[in-house]
Length: 204
Image (tube, rainbow, N blue to C red; front, side, top):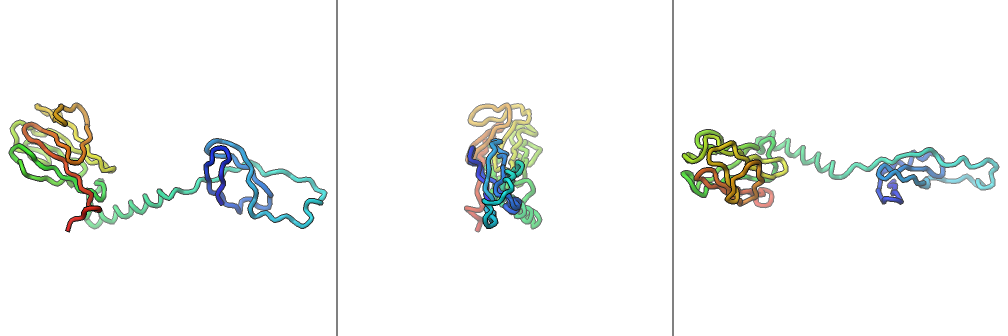
């Protein structure tokens, strides 16, 4: 049965078999600590019970109902199982958010018009080292770090480069979140982040 606190309207799951043979049971709301009584829905009085000589013993000691398991927990478990299956099949990289495809498009610089797919949680941009090579003499050897979080957000941070990393024309000093189609610059190379929902727009 569902027990509803009359003070804060919180709803909790309670096994009505725990009432036993008592008429009512006292509860203490685990959310607001309000004490209240709930009638036993399965209580059936004996015939002529009201004329019995023995006194009423009163309600049982305080009991606390158990909040029902949220539906979100089941959905989270199913989603986690699906992700594990995709990883095992080689269709998804561990740590990457499912259903999203991330890319960097070179807008200017020596690699202009090239597109690099971001297929791991961390991608280093650099002149000669890292995952995205710019071949740009104004870019440091290890210039910037792009991080993709499990929630699908993308962050960029400068790696103590000589000329700095610019977002919206300003040099960044710490991690900055990037949105889809947002531009940033490393040296003379400008990039655009591209994020696509593959579940809504699947590849053909």
